[in-house]
Image 1: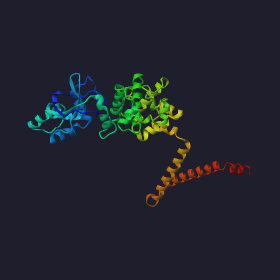
Image 2: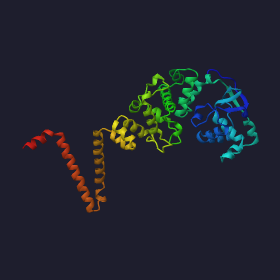
Image 3: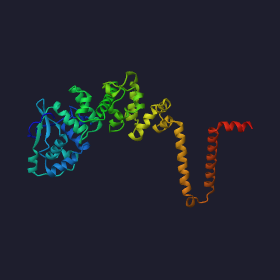
Image 4: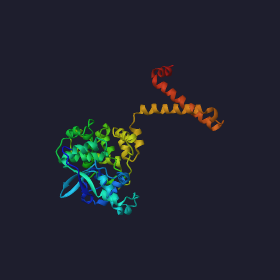
Length: 367
């Protein structure tokens, strides 16, 4: 923050959650949400349970005040919503009882002490640097989607260039630009009605799949993505909107169509999808319902597949040889199987020699 006011004590019942908080927006909290919904989200997704235990045992640390701004006659907590939720849960046992939460009991004296909390006042515009450093690039990092939403809000609300935001919060890896571009891509897909986050197959929105994948050559080329330094609100050309919708379905699936995503984890699935999108034949297979593994095999250079198959065969034969003495029970079937393997190996070797020395093969045939 550029300025800081003195610490004051305010009654808990005068403090309100920040419904504009990007971390809450990630879980569907909007300006219409009620406090009970916000507390439930904070409890389930953001470890408020641990704060409840800590505050019940040690009280509220006065040297860590909530940061509050006054908007429309209300005191809005722009930093410290989790702590506010923990205090409200401790003061109002009916919240915990209604949700079946097990919380420690505290004395009436402790409740009286929690009735007022230390706060310091600040405007949102003068607080974004501190909050950005703390939650985007600092010790208390938000999820990638919450970071992107916060960056976009600061960029649009206060007309601050992304480079300036990055410099202010100490980002040296263009994370700010990458997060912003990822958010613009998913918002463009929603505006163009080719995909919506609410239709994703999994409950969790793995935003990092998207903003990380946009750095990959195959994925970015597939949707003709604009460069991150353009700071475009519509990074995908209109003639690639259909492909954008396909990409989103591959990344997140479709609840309405009961389609799971092909990307379940960044390693290896995101890299595999990137490779697939570099190959027309592989893309056609993916569109036709083939799994990611099958499409990925189609996309791979045949020389690489051949070499890997040989190496794998050698490893398995070496393993079989190591167990021959105690593992072979004199079975006739296994002996025949080994003979078939030997024939295949001999045939493969002969073909490789002939391919490597075609001139020798021609001379032999002429004789």
